[in-house]
Image (cartoon, rainbow over all chains, first blue to last red; front, top):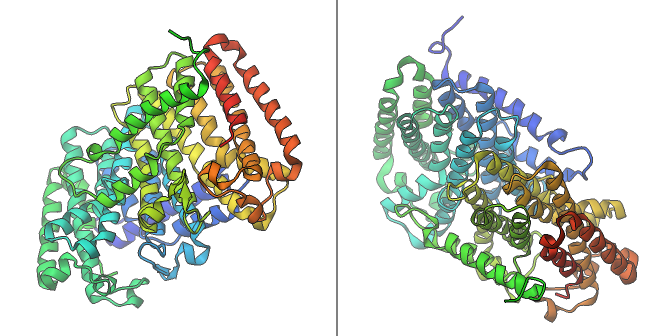
Length: 305
Length: 305
């Protein structure tokens, strides 16, 4: 049997993605709703289209691995991980809408409003966001009430107006307001950083780990959240649509500055190396147990699609 | 001093609306977000526009009065009431969008996407929905963790794909699917009923009232939820745009059948009387303490705008 160090990281990620996908499928199938009510079939199909799309499931992976680091209950971690993925998928569905980023493709497939219609896409996003809180609060998530509440609160803060939704609003305004480098860093920490930060922190919350560990994991999440965005900016500058399965060069076309476009490819690559080093240093206290999370940091920074 | 029976119901409702409005204003002002982050000003303004609009605050009223019935902590009830109103306002903002009901006016004012833009309206709705869970889970809501979780779960179920969002999806499909009378009742129980039912149940949850009381209040909420919708249908048939501050006659124009249009004005008025009697009977065990909630049932059924 191979140890975790010998199995390539992408295979480890894929193995967990399959487990997450199976639970997402179960949570989004017919059993989502009790038997006696009318079934909004089109809405349920739109929700499934927006979620069951072969995503990498990076955020759920981070929940599972940060939970494993502190010996949290794996079943509970799995449910929190799927809740987080529902929130991520809601944000993609709404971001893709004509009034927002107006994207027709996502992972090479039609976006939800293209495959269905705008109303279904809006409601599918709304429903996934709401359902995420249901999944966490449900009694099937076997975690003491106090921790569950901390998970609910953390998710609401990461996704709300001071987190992801606020960051998306700032990003839409960025064409007009032309934020400086500090402004771009702050908006990205909200738009993409907050949910990744929460994914890493959630494992520590699940296990009721000491506050210091909780903060350390959150900081690790912040570092890889920023790395994730820088890698994305870099790909937007250098990759083509075919590789990405979605439109690229959009930031430049929209006249939107990114940290990568402002500072160039070499600077961006150097920043990415620095963030990976910082992320690895944060996990030093956990030794070999944190090996996979360390690989995740490298993977995020070096990804080519 | 006048007793509650002597003060007209509308004045009682208005008095509580002012208290709710003051807390909503406080929760949605600059202090919503911590000091160090970038402020999505346009998003925050859109959220305020969608919430601070002089609404009747019927759902928060129901939370406050059902909480008072069981001697729940009034401050905690007030916070849960504002959270529920944030969810109600999110649903109005999204329902008004061009891709949904396409309304330009709400309470005589431009809807959020008209006063701002579609992207801001989508994100303001998303943010209000998310913020509602933040308000409940926040430590400032002084309720034991187990009850808070029950409140979170109840809200998620009432607003999600098996509740309000699912009902709105079914309503949008109704032009095509032409549901029968039973189908219309089920979709309305989800679309408008679920949140009103939850508003009444929330007070019993807040006070950790026995399961029987919780179910009784939920049933009361279902009765007035259906009455609310029937009164709305009746107004859509009979009132004009000026009285309502929003477009009327829309159901007929959209070729959408309602219970009132299928069965006529006299049948609808008889149904409303029956629902009020049922709602009053459910509250009999609570005697005089339930006087205001009984008046609320009559008010909902008899409202003229």
